[in-house]
Each structure stands twice: as C-alpha cells, then as structure tokens.
Length: 196
Image (cartoon, rainbow, N blue to C red; front, side, top):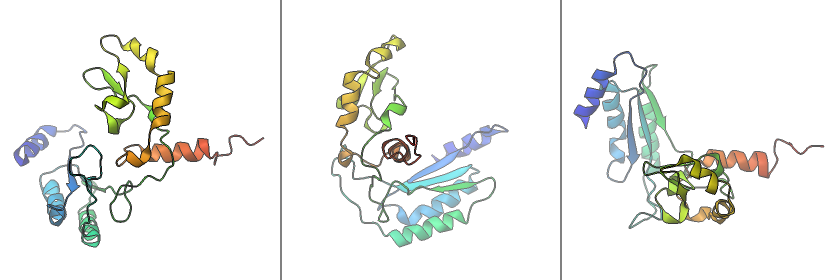
C-alpha cells in the first residue's frame, strides 16, 4: 500500500489531484493515528482524513458500541493538526458522532434522500448512499435505459420508501448535514419562508 501511495505521488506531477490517506479509528489502531498522519505527510500526500469507525451499523455482524479512549484520540487528532501546512491538510471528522464517538442523528426524520440518486455500476439505484445494495432500499434500475428513472423517481412507492426510513436503524448518516438543513429550513421554517 505504501509503495502504491509513493507511486501515485510520483505520477501526480503538476496535476491538482488531491491524494489523501484515509484512516478509521479502531481499537486496534487508535495509538497509531499521529504516526499514520506523519507517514502521509512524509509520502507527499495532499492530506490525511481520519474518523471514528461506525461499528453500530445494522449490516455488520457482531455490531457493538465501542468504548475508545476519547481524550487520547483527541490528543492524537491535535498532534495531526500540528502537521498541517499549505500543502498538507488534516481532516479529523467527528461531526456525525457524539462526544464519545457513537452515532448520532441531530434530525428527526430523513429528508435528504430526494436530493440525489445513488446509482451503482450495475444500473441499480437506491434510496440512500448508506443503504446501497440493500434490497429494501432499491428504487429501480436505469440500465439499459436511463429514462427508466422517470418511472420510479417521485413515484408513490418512492415517497413511501422515504416516509418509512427509521433513523434509529441507520448508521452514521453520510448526508446528516443535508438532513439538518432541510429540517430547519423547510420543516421548521427557520428561514421564515412562509412569513406573510
């Protein structure tokens, strides 16, 4: 893997490709976060991206809540940020987790799914990027004719699938920020669109 990263850096040339080392924080590797970040920088990568793993997902056998040494990990994150330069960025992604790095949903309902269509290489489309390849969230197919999308997108079945989403069964939500924004701006009307 390291040799492949070196190769990518050597081939980057003057391109604007942003090469990133991504790491999930696990019980087995939390002590290596800063070392991994330094390695990414030494290799000449553009950035280092680290976030807690989500072992609370329903689709993981043996799912469980992890109790990680949060303060130690935060210290590792801080040390990583000390490595930042104009040419090397560090992303410590924790906004989709509570202070103990457990999954949270800061919205009451999933309203982000109509904003995009996750379409996989086989042509099948799904309700949610986090539920792709799950039969119950399959919307339809756009292969071999992409216009087939028009037969199921926005249909009654599509609306029912959206309404049926139970966020307590969802993992870390890729589009949590969209859900928060839609809930605040549309559902709660915090932008006062309906002001007379």
